[in-house]
Image 1: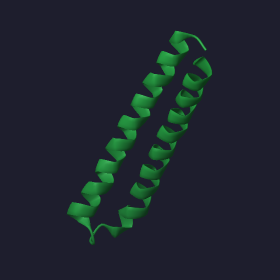
Image 2 (image 1 turned 90 degrees about the horizontal axis):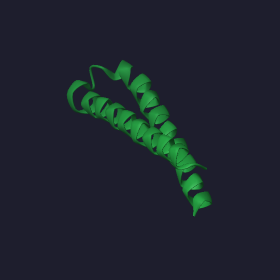
Image 3 (image 1 turned 90 degrees about the vertical axis):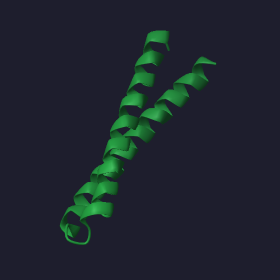
Image 4 (image 1 turned 45 degrees about the horizontal axis):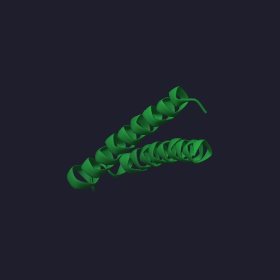
Amino acid sequence: MSPEDLKKLEKEVKKTKRLANEQAMELHDLIEDKLPDAYGELMGIAEATYLACKAWDEANQKLNAALAEAA
């Protein structure tokens, strides 16, 4: 894998981590500020947080595999 490809993977990991963190903050805000009144939002935000974390994990696994292959 070329150095440019590795940089792209690193950038993707950083991006997906940022998005996962933003989604986690949204979930945190819901829990801290809006529950129990906004319980109807809980499943949607929780699912979006799960998917964002899963996207980060998949990108991170790709990067780790590429780094191991390059070593």
